[in-house]
Amino acid sequence: MDHIEAANWTRHFDTILWQVTSIFAAAIGALIAYSYSNFDVAISLAGLFFTILPVYFGASFRELRKRVSPKLDPDLRKALKEGRQLYQWQVFVSIFIIFECLWGGLLVKNMATCLLKSLVIGIVISVILLTLWLSSVGKNTVHEDKNA
Picture 1 (cartoon, rainbow, N blue to C red):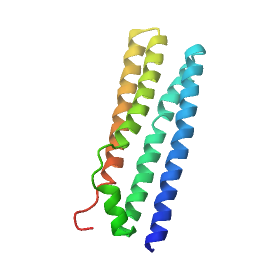
Picture 2: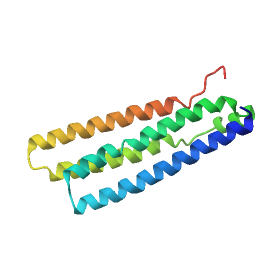
Picture 3: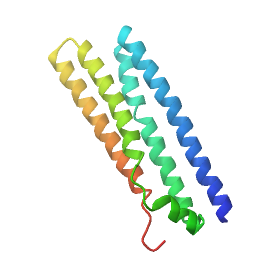
Picture 4: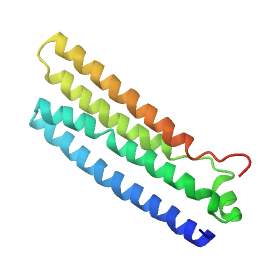
């Protein structure tokens, strides 16, 4: 694989990442808005778990991009890595954690008993922890080896 082909693959992975996550974010936002006026436990639980998927896909695309990165032109790779001060990954993950908290709040608000509310809180915490774990996998895939 030459430098140009590597750059094309990297661009492809970034484009797919933003397209997939934008579609997911719009769908999740619309589903949350719908669920606030038409609450249904099954839709809300599905929405909560559906919200994990964009972070999974994001981590997966970042892993693929990491595999292609060593094939990039060394000057381009250096320009993309050095001097960065703003990072998108934490913001990206935070958006979906906010969605998960909204789902959790909606579920807790509409649950009748304390036991069900406790169960929902446990599920929401589990989903958030899974999301944080996925985000750490995605974050670790972009750090380059010192020897590369």
